[in-house]
View 1 (tube, rainbow, N blue to C red):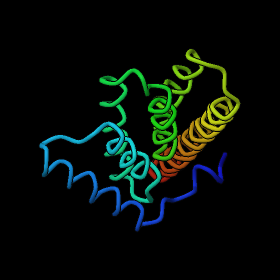
View 2: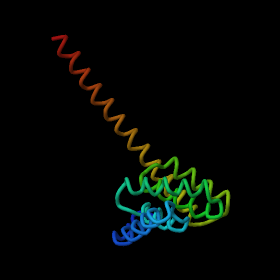
View 3: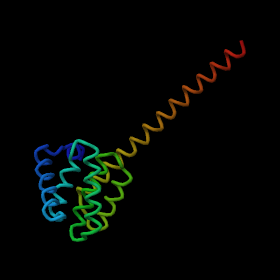
View 4: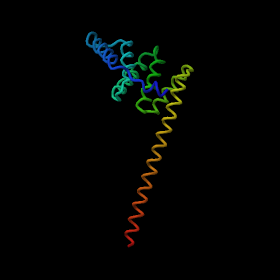
Length: 148
């Protein structure tokens, strides 16, 4: 799963679907569902966090307005949120997908997100513990110096 999450869309693919998206928008004032999905699919696989967030916004809109493709939209919402380390949202979308159908790839993504989330929590606890030790040391030193 780590390899899949680290796979980045080729820049030329992203640019091609971006041009298609904006071309449709200019011509008709709206973009087809298929083009929105293709563009969002590229965006959530971008190396840039802002692109991923933009892809997530498009996918959320698609999931809300087009229930026929909801399964795919929800998977890539989980995927995109996992890529930007928004683990709670990623888990929410994994669980929503698994309510629709059982899928080994989504279960694997869910497990990966849980592991990464646990690692982040452990890092946070370690940092907080380290900060408390440093603060305690400084206070102890200050008290010892004040007594002299």
